[in-house]
Length: 171
Image 1 (cartoon, rainbow, N blue to C red):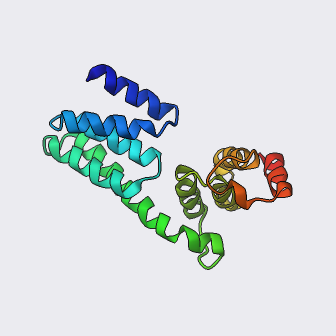
Image 2 (image 1 turned 45 degrees about the vertical axis):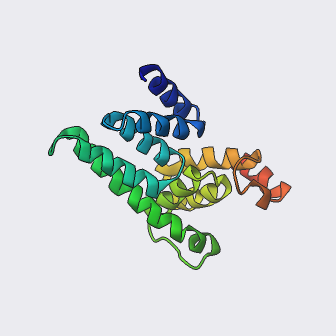
């Protein structure tokens, strides 16, 4: 199980969603190991499956002794996953312009949701709005713009060629 665990973590680091299946199999084989469940929660979070991530991270935290630093960290990450799940539900309203975040951090949170769910054009839009208010979001803005500009992401087909060119220029 140790090698499979390391391999699954490697898949996460490479952005390969097969890691979720590999970690799920480990959790099923060894449900008593909280670290496997925690890594599954991390992988789900990485790939924008926020509700599943929150539940899995809470389960991992519950397997640890009460008050343990690792358990507290997992509970904190579960709260963040829950927050991003809620934002994910509201992202279409932000993209449609019917909901306008008021702070750079709020724009960046929506950008993070879009990025983790593979919608790089939407992420670029949100992070660009965040950058207008606070330059510290320029890194995620550039990365998202570059990915959208070369046609990557679930929303890549929504961009006209001239829009992709503009995104590449801004990256």
